[in-house]
Length: 234
Image 1 (cartoon, rainbow, N blue to C red):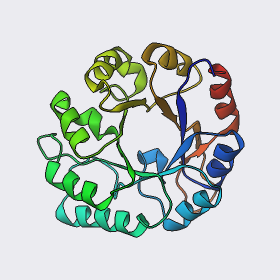
Image 2: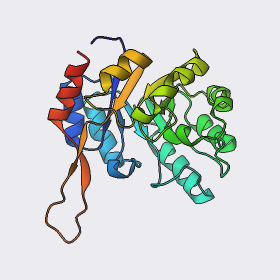
Image 3: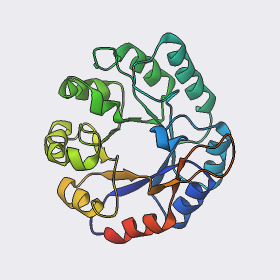
């Protein structure tokens, strides 16, 4: 690789697990429903990933939409974490905000206590935070290791101009991991300009639904797209 940075593949199925192993990714983020931004995967999918000895980080997100959760959703998140805690996964990808878009510190405290020994990544709820600079010390306090961010924008292209300031504020406190719209045409620019500790992408394409009364279009990893992205930074 041109630059020393880790590669994290967003994986939603067995094919993604297989390709992550084949192309020697440093780690994976496991989720499902990628076309809706990703939600919590099943325990079965987690076990399949672990069988391949991949460094596995699991997204814990109980539903699509925003990141302000009610009490039942919070209980669900904690129950999901508790159910996975004894497995040899490396970490959890989580995030929660209050209605005013500030970090839900009380809930993050509960998560932090429950996940001792696991890496914590704060997901793209960061891109919706109101006073994000104030959140850096909070995330560090609750033992978060890194932040997945599209540069405070809807995608990395729109957020490129913000990465320098984010990285400066993070300093040595948090790892910066760009993600959200990373593709073969921009991955090298992101790598060279931002020089992040890691970069996150799915290399997925929209798969036309099969013929069924119950089918919907979904995102699925595309090996050709994946190879193009790896070649761009090799």
